Image (cartoon, rainbow, N blue to C red; front, top):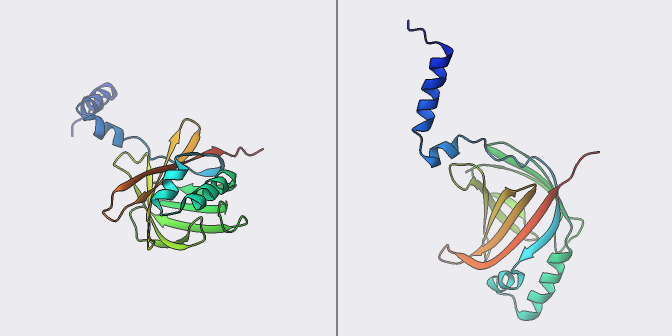
Length: 185
């Protein structure tokens, strides 16, 4: 049996790590963890284009944008590298008292979910890439499926939303939801 001293083990490990590519090194990073309570702080982006992408008329787009800017929403998230659980409060255009709880397995099957308009759609979650630093949610069973990305930017959780066209390409309108963590007293 070969006995290797601690300094030699460290040198062997460093040698292996130095031979990794950047993408391989990034994949060693711990998966993003959004666990905690998050409150919607502000809504940004091109709301008019987003609602235009959904096929809304000019007047409906303007009214919808005003409603979006006034939404109140909280998400209580528990997650790990394999599953995402969320309890949502508020955030619905059709029902300000909206509440729903759901759990998704990363890369798993679609589940039924109530979107902000009150429609029941299919929802699936997956990691964007091997780094596990961005979550992607995709909806189905609706005229304009959505592509949602959740990631951390500094101390904020960012959630971007875009429509997907009939060819599976992202449409230009992007809604950016900025959340702040609720600190327990």
